Length: 260
Image 1 (cartoon, rainbow, N blue to C red):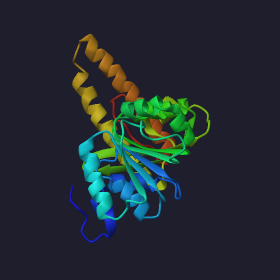
Image 2 (cartoon, helix red, strand yellow):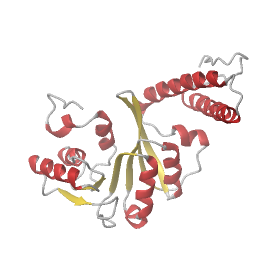
Image 3 (cartoon, rainbow, N blue to C red):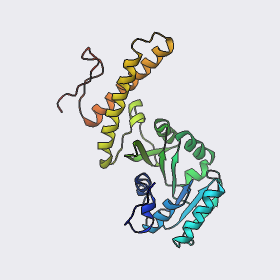
Image 4 (cartoon, rainbow, N blue to C red):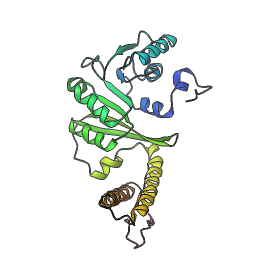
């Protein structure tokens, strides 16, 4: 990743994905960056006045050594505590208001949070940027007593990323489509979400076309899965952006938008 020339401080070392993730942290919250790597996010949170203190943790000694060098370089030793930690092992309940985890798969995030329920319960919010299984992570958060307060989405280097901010609270269960595609996005994210839904639908149709003449049981199951995903995709577009015609309604498999 190229460093951003001309930007002051540590921001130039962070991708847009990580800048947007850091922006989800509530101002004034003490934060814990789980899997801190180079500690640039932790430094940014303090530098920007978002977090007064940060505990930056990583499971590997190599990244933590680089993090130490960077914390010293930016003069943040008094405000950033570095710890070798597998998940939340080295964090005491109540030490952090915000638990930030970014760049990991959703299932790994679930395991980390499940292993330390007292620490999670003592935090006021979770800021999570999963690399996979976002729908499952949304369900998990609801299952442990957190409501998803805010979501962001961006496209970077040809990939789409979702960022979640969750806080304590109960809410009515979301639909399968809402768990899959989200419900509480920031205004800036909707154009990216619309682009993602269109791209996913296009690719789904291509795969579906390739399965038309496959007569195997496996191909049949895959076709049904794709049809279900296309219907959910359509439901999301209708809910978020206006009325659309369901797949196959025209008899030729083409999807056309109606006037909104």
